[in-house]
Length: 142
Image (cartoon, rainbow, N blue to C red; front, side, top):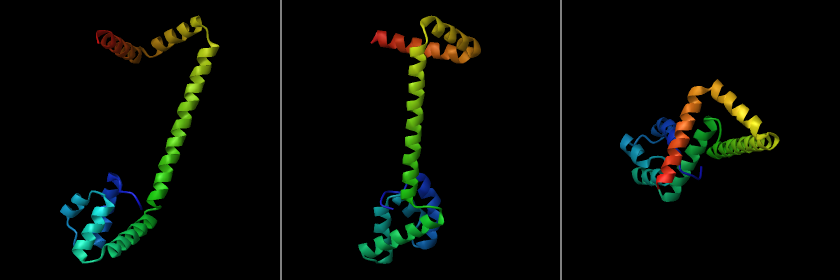
């Protein structure tokens, strides 16, 4: 783990960290807040270790925790990047679909489709219309 720990991961890890380093208090964990450097510094201070010893101990424990919890933090980062790429591809596909729809239809067909959508979804259509009207009025006022 080379990065700071996210808030969700930190909450999950606190129990394991308490069992490994019993001299650290809840206030210490609150102060650390998932920052690896702060954890290393406190281990160094409370256990009288050198910086390198504390860093090796923290790395070893975090790697142990990662292997027990089903993957390393770098694996989680890679998974998050993969999800982002998938979301980006979906948005790109939706934009391409909308572009081809607009290119294939004439204005009469677009008006008929819009009318059908308003009839099918009257409340969301009304709210969208109010939002657009608000934005237009605000932009004209400025």
